[in-house]
Amino acid sequence: MLGFIIQRFLQAVLVMAVMSVIVFCGVYAIGNPIDIVIPPEATADIRAEAIRRLGLDRPLYEQYFIFISNLLQGDLGRSFVYNVPVLELIGGRLPATLELVLISVISATVLGVGLGVYAGYRPDSWVSKTIMAVSVLGFSVPSFWVGLILILFFAVNLGWLPAGGRGDTVEIWGVAWSFPTLDGLSHIVLPAVNLALFKLAMMIRLARAGTREIMLTDTIKFARAAGLSEATILRRHLLKLISIPIITVFGLELGSTLAFAVVTETIFSWPGVGKLIIDSITVLDRPVMVAYLILVAFLFVTINFVIDLVFALIDPRVRHGASA
Image 1: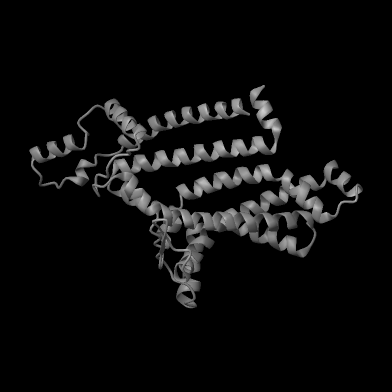
Image 2: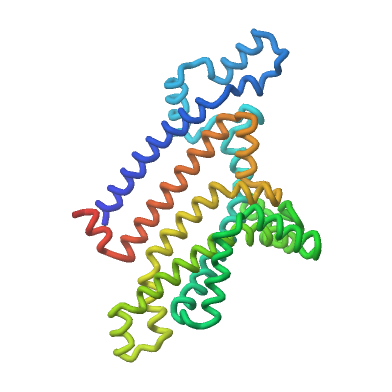
């Protein structure tokens, strides 16, 4: 097991090293932030001083090594626009995105797996057919359109829920969260539903396909022949056998939703990281863009690393195959 962990860890480090080069070079090849940060009427001396102060007068490779050196010390630089540490800037927006994403992905997974298992266990019932028909909408309807319809129906026409914002927050361990308050929870409902719809449809179809496949295997036949109840078969055999693809999709969807919840945050004016990166791209705030993409890459690498470890614990063949 230790050899498996070391192998996966070294692979993760290599991926992060390659991604840091790609991200840094890709972002620094786009535009010139000086044209936005410095007013057009600034003198040549002021412009040169600003370029020197921001470190943009150095060669690209030298800027990269300075960035990596600072990164290893936990410093991702300072924002060109806000003139504050990037980690502080992102950290202030991260809790809003984190609570929205966790609520949407976890609820979509729990509900989707339950509905998908039922649809696969009783595929001919009208309830199962309705579940599968509804899941088609999750793949077919664009999220921005769903968000606008949710606002129009529940916020404008009915007035049941707020159309945007985060609502009241409370501090827990020094971090502001909105879900513990009733007002904050009411603000989360619409963006969470909008964000969860695609994940819900994916989990339903994934769980249904896995259930249909597992129910036809000899394992289930032997379990029934042994006199086990259907509830025991579902709990001990079915859920365990379909858990690996569900864990994989859950991890990847969690990472992708954290990284790219931009549309939902923009529609519902949710003050998260997604809105911050859009604003940073608009003004070419390079340190924020680079830090965000590096953190996204680190997030995906970490999630995949954890998923590999979970696989190794669930299925010993994974770690034995890796060490062979």
